[in-house]
Image (cartoon, rainbow, N blue to C red):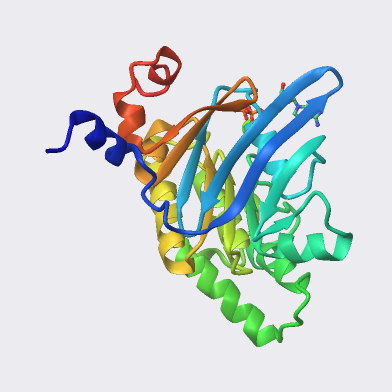
Length: 260
Ligand SMILES: Nc1ncnc2c1ncn2[C@@H]1O[C@H](COP(=O)(O)OP(=O)(O)OP(=O)(O)O)[C@@H](O)[C@H]1O
Ligand SMILES: [Mg+2]
């Protein structure tokens, strides 16, 4: 007979624990001056999963993903992406790893002086593999269709709503077929309906592009909709990790503050 305890262990084990990690972070430290932001941080992102990262404002979530893509240099520790430690890679090797990672910035940041089409062309033209214009056009249309906005091809970002701009930022990220997606607050500043649409899109992208994703969010609805697994950061470390059920049922006050 199963005891209650074994049941809860089974319930709380990661859904995809049999899969290989695509990102493995071990003992990561990052300080700014004497402010220690990340302290001995360790976790894994498994192949094909959506991993939601929770943590209060200033807990180091954006710093973490900037360290993963090398926009910030961490002080020590290991960040393995596809078994390569990005902290020890040379420029060229780091660029190769970066090509496999799509990063949706917290600010969304489209180029205001470029049309939607030009915004999407930009990452495609920077790819090592030179594409023909026809291939570029096809990829742009496909990415716009995947975010449900094929009609805005020739519009300027200033002509779009906040939710539409977020979708275009998403299209610009997926247009290069990334294997890993890093979403920094993908639904912040959007109304609840648009937020849910973006969360659904994140799930669509996971299925269609077979991406493994880290989703940083304050939006508990977004977490509920997208998470295969969650981790919570607190004081620069992983405070808790597990599946949604574990977080929803937690009686810990810090976790309850998120899951009201
Ligand atoms: N480039 C930088 N220089 C100095 N300090 C920084 C820098 N980037 C981040 N910090 C500091 O690191 C801490 C963590 O910042 P971070 O942006 O990672 O927080 P966050 O968890 O993403 O918060 P939010 O939920 O508000 O986006 C903050 O105290 C911030 O001031
Ligand atoms: Mg942030």
